[in-house]
Length: 321
Image (cartoon, rainbow, N blue to C red; front, side, top):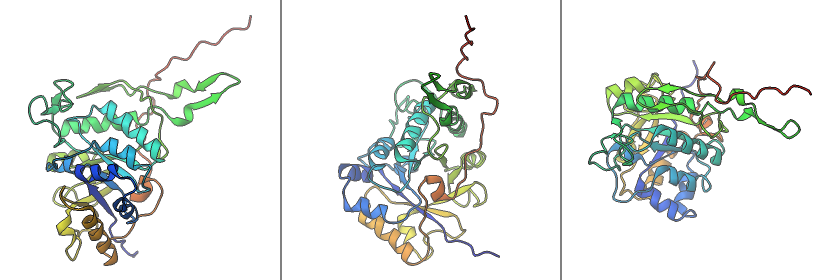
């Protein structure tokens, strides 16, 4: 029987922490976080937990700034309450290119930083762009389906850039996703597949209904042991409050990996100190690898667009005169 590995760990950062780090990209705190060997930094976790601080910064904007200043992969919190799936897919794919394959998304049903009054209670309503759709596991699931398909709709090796034939891309391989659900999205995405194939698709769950949907679709699920058994999804992380992480077992007992969740008011030095203590005590182990998928031990995404309709009609061949 092989030796069971110690849990990996990741570090959550609230909007308050993101404001501090982006304001000073050369800060010792950022260097300290980057030196921990965390599997990833989860950006904007207070948006998913429902306890936002008084100051915040959009997680995807933060990722654009931090990708150049850190080698640690980044998991960006996003929610259909604020983000339309097409826009979210495009931003996350662009960030994955920018970072060299170190980005994924962590979906949440609601964004605690979105307005509380109508239409902020509906999907896409938090951005005040439309009436949206009812929030719930089905809407989050639909968002995940759209993201996964869009990220595969434009294979990067379809770009041939042949000057002699004047062919930029093999257009037959760029496809529609033809998704009809809570959201109707034809596709394709205008961003090609990324250095890790597709960004990692994560989902943070807080209810049994969310968990039931997430384990059938997400590659990485953040949830308690009561909601998500460790074998239920390809990668499972337990949400652990920072004060619980300081305990003897680091807040984890079942072999799942750990996502450390500080409060907005927790100093970054304290976050780094507790993570280092867990490493020193052998409670967790550092992660290695250059891409996010490598850091969390995740293989390529499941292919979902076999036989999809080409997005561009092939030009008729010219007859020789």
